[in-house]
Length: 207
Image (cartoon, rainbow, N blue to C red):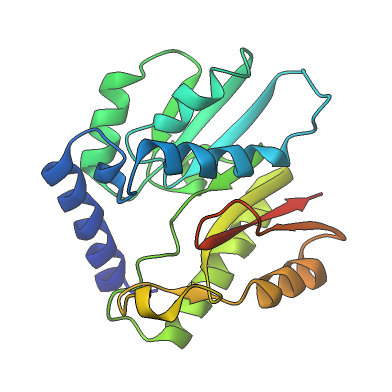
């Protein structure tokens, strides 16, 4: 992915947070309820009976709302937020300044951690060619697999969306393709979640 395309994506999300402030709309979601419903799927990557401390990377962390969600269920975790928008990171750092919260611009800046989650980071394709965008997604998932030692989860808009409501600047993915790719390339333990009443799906990759 060229630097110019990365800059285009950065500008898109920076404009969203400037226009809408610290809100679900500020990270391009319709509502806080849908934002939290996505979080609910992503955290299924954690073992249900595991109460031990863990480290997690939130790739595309925005202003850090995932921390508020995690704090409802866990009290012993290290959080590493990654975002390409300097404005998002500025707000996140000013809001969450505890010793267990770190914010950076790339995975290389934080290194290997237990888990990684990514919500909505592959949706806004804009005018980028679909093949180029798919290549970018695959490269990014490969990085997720490298940096997450216990597993990672991510979501994508689904190609099973109602066609009259689909938008040209968004990317709609084939869930079966991504299940198959993750199964063949990352782990035997893959889950596809497509039953939570949003036009998207979540994939869990357990190491």
